[in-house]
Length: 498
Image 1 (cartoon, rainbow, N blue to C red):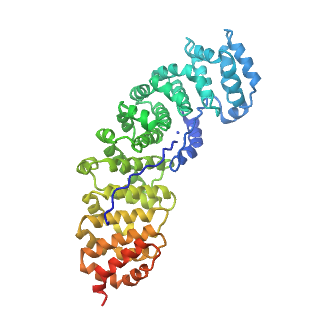
Image 2 (cartoon, rainbow, N blue to C red):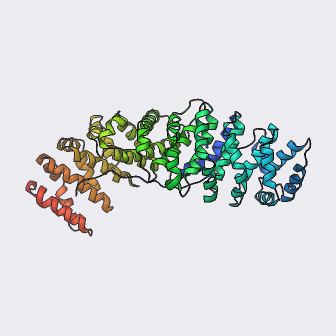
Image 3 (cartoon, rainbow, N blue to C red):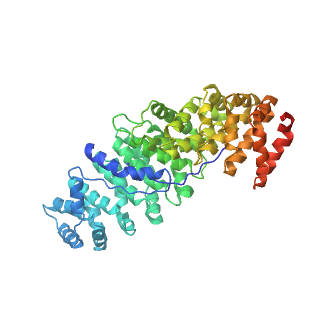
């Protein structure tokens, strides 16, 4: 009745980032990535040409369908201006109506595939640019039309050109979530081993790693991801590659680590067994990276976008903790000072990023659920008073804090006495007055463990005016609350009321 177990967090799959262009692109993607934290989001990305600015993109987007037909006919005839026509076509294909017109032209995709596989390097680049523009289309019938090109896009992931490889990856990433047919084809064509090889061979090229992470994250969000795609990913070398990218690069930034962390999140929150990821050391790696970031946050460093890496890491650690056998926990998370990190994140994001604060408290709950070592660390590092101060906060924060306190109280009677010395009884007197029935019920759970641990604790609660609080709760409209209040009064507190 009084035992609290770990909470299995199943955050909905949610999806959803050379120098000025990258900054522009990241700014455009910021809102998309931000939305990943709270809801499912499959995003598409458009990689801009290096030799054009945003104003050119906007201007060229008005190219008409007729212009596309004209360019298509010109490209059917070889000539010295083929490269110019291809570049013009890629810009014209930013118009959604022009995209539909193009795929309706007989042999239009055959033409693009021919140029994509030809000997002219410039034409190959412009052909993949055209496919990239098509992949960004809002029309669902465009992606199936692009399928004849996808085997070549996968083959070209071993290309040495960063720009070309990025275009192939973002094109594949845009196509991935469109339909079951597209996903089935891509899986059959070997997209998973292709991505694994790409990340392994291009480990030094972080722009390519970022793009590969985006493509994989799109694939993992497919409706059948848990049933077919995720087992294939777990059976590949991708988990170890994703983990190797988690450390942010000081020069390049957070983007590759963010993409790979979200991929790991989609893997850990699936219905699949997390033993594979645990065997790869995922819990150890994610928790150590989280501690590094938490240390920076505690020192006042809140670099823009840092929370977009902290969020998936928190979810990965929390989900992996709920799968980790109790006997392996100390080896998987060897440093008990991770509790300092989690409390620092809680405090840092309480006012500005409530969702992150709640995630931090949830991980703290899973960490303390079956481990006396982490419960002891919270007391040793004197972190409990800070947690008690957060009990007035709503939006799920206080319920998680109470769970953590309950985990500590459940472990040892000595911990209950130490909790009392931190001022917890005053905090419970406040939460027992709250309107939320879950808060009141959980507060009484914690109170029960405290008062049965020592007669002195029961006496102190009476001195705090606890009797009148429980007597009031005996008239609560919730039967469970009434019964708990009566049980506490009659069996544990009334002897100390005189």
